[in-house]
Image (tube, rainbow, N blue to C red):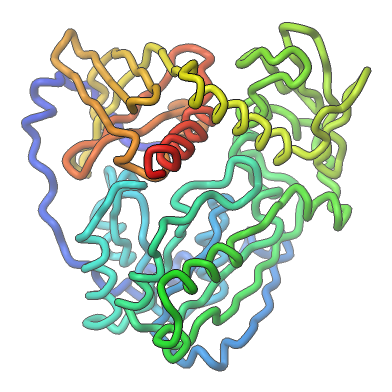
Amino acid sequence: MKIKTVKADYGKVIDIKNPKHRRPMRPLFILMLVIRVLAFFELIKVGFTFTKKRMDEAGKGPYLILMNHSSFIDLKIASRIFFPKKYCIVCTSDGFVGKEWLMRLLGCIPTQKFVTDVSLIMDMIYAVKKKNTSILMYPEASYSFDGCATPLPRKLGTLIKKLGVPVVTVITDGAFLYDPLYNGLRKRKVKVSAEVKCLLTVDEIKEKSVAEIDAMLDNEFSFDNFANQRDKKIAVTEDFRAEGLERILYKCPACKTENNMVGSGVSLTCKECGKEYFMDKFGQMNAVAGNTEYPHIPDWYRWERECVKEELKNGTYKLDCDVQIGIMTDFKAIYMVGDGHLTHDENGFTLTGCDGQLTYRQSPLANYGLYADYYWYEIGDVICIGDKKRLYYCFPKTSQNVAKARIAAEELFIMKKG
């Protein structure tokens, strides 16, 4: 899927007014039906099934539906489970670019990832209370990189108490293995299923504290797709399964060199020291020669996180790269304004560019996470920073790994928050 981009002068782009806030609409049934029909064929292909738990206690709705985010098939899964029930979808604002009218008619509510958005809370309350419409939300905000849950926002329980409707969770099994982000969004022959559960009734929400609700959500959104694949012996036999794996496993555990890993076919190789790892059909890594430091991919990724934390503690962490800059300020297009330079260290992000016209700084405490993505709308790997007024999409020109920047942003927030 692509997004509309327009080359533009930075001076003109900053004069563009933000779109006027609009209340969410109830989705049109005819469009819901179209999505259901389009979803049918792919869900048949993956043999999709789902189970229900306690849904009789949830009543007829509306609900707050919280779903884990693995791949683009998630939206089709939701359509299969809940059709013909109407629900608004909380989605990233760049999803509205070039097609705002369609997204509005589908009942979508735009928001900016990891940016504090009071209007989103009001829109969700409006949809539930005034439109009697359920809400589908992906609380992780981003696709999983390593197949494990990404951090949830704190005090999500506060929102749940404000809405005052049953909370229904949808946790998928196989969706990540079917279409992982790192693998260039190439689909594999894997069965997909889901568990649909009433996590909290209205009475239970009233009885529990915000901290207790947050703890329940953390427990619910704790999963490991690669461990599940290994333990259930789910075979991924495609001969391209390791391609793009360097986007997750960017650091060699043998020689400690970064951004020199290359995934090709079913192998991951370090260009610096030559060590090669074979990815077996059950998602485990095996050194072709010598010791296998981290057979389990999430363990490798956690080791990389520990390395980043150590760099932050001793003051050696720094992202420093040239980037191509895109700006979103309305829903008409992503405005490509030229080249710039992005740095990230213990003081946060600094973006400069556009012949000296642009300087933007973002504190480590501005966001608990980072909008970083692979193959973003087929343009390239991206790091997105910004605020309610303007978002800056930074596309690194070198082999900088956006996963490391995401890890660093998460850990910096924790460190600065104390």
